[in-house]
Amino acid sequence: DTEVTQTPKHLVMGMTNKKSLKCEQHMGHRAMYWYKQKAKKPPELMFVYSYEKLSINESVPSRFSPECPNSSLLNLHLHALQPEDSALYLCASSQESGVGYNSPLHFGNGTRLTVT
Amino acid sequence: EDKVVQSPLSLVVHEGDTVTLNCSYEVTNFRSLLWYKQEKKAPTFLFMLTSSGIEKKSGRLSSILDKKELFSILNITATQTGDSAIYLCAVFFFPIYNQGGKLIFGQGTELSVKP
Image (cartoon, rainbow over all chains, first blue to last red; front, side, top):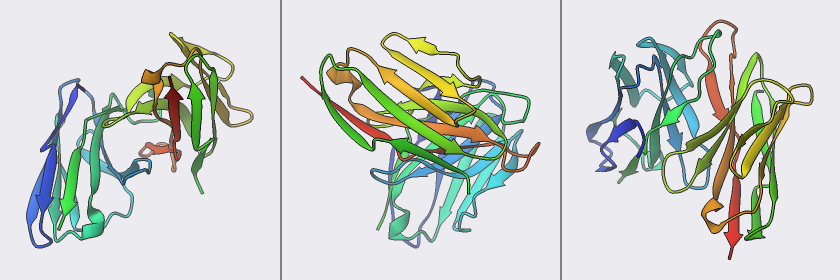
């Protein structure tokens, strides 16, 4: 088990649904990340939040909408997804993401998303 | 283009063998190189390397970074079947200095250890 908790573990949704993925950490980390991982591929960065502000968006389509309500929580809102969006969505956190710091990312177990 | 390249992409060995996994990188404003092990779910953290030539060790695993050659290796000695996993190399860097840092991954090395 990791100290980054993601819910739900599995999600099946239709292309017209709206759903949200949730991520929580209580390690006092100030940077949080969303990654997408397809089968047999490495994780691909989607978004980075630093001190609850979006600092990096890797040109992700607008059908994915991140939200960081406070320093412990990170959400990913999903709307009008396509079948090719089916993947494992990983959340991660680190102590900081600024220039002056070095801290490893700690990953949650992910949400396995299937879009039908 | 910022990139991380791992080799080999897959490796099959027998228990007791020693393996060396390779990682090279090209990024702007490098900060650190990290190794992760991924089995079924979350990548689990192994090492973070920031300085050249200083070996990090944890049991049978060790790793070292060469910042001049932009290269790192992960060694596993006396391999066991439980070492079977995908080993991911990742680099933390700043595409624009003093703005958001990010971690990108290599393709991974799939290690299979046979009894």
